[in-house]
Length: 143
Image (tube, helix red, strand yellow):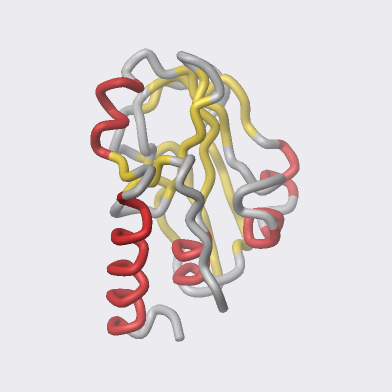
């Protein structure tokens, strides 16, 4: 399996959640393919309700997958302003199109400029993703 990490996105280095700034305040988020491969097929997904405040590095939802159950960690702080109803009804959509129709939520983030400093983007994505692929293979989380 190949793993693609677009350089225009921002990635949470630990939790494999991506961010796409859509404006100065609105940030679309999802899970990257490597994170999904280590989880397996998503069977259940819940997100905090619209209007909920989330803090970078803190839970913003729950997920159940073939290989684990756990919390979805917010890559940046902000307020949930939109939840993807398609993936809430069919979580496997996240596995099918992690960068497309499988996005999770849109956050309104007034702390984006500061929070994004903790994320990897641009030319740094390739080196980070290669290290992560190596680490995941060594741990046996992916083939």
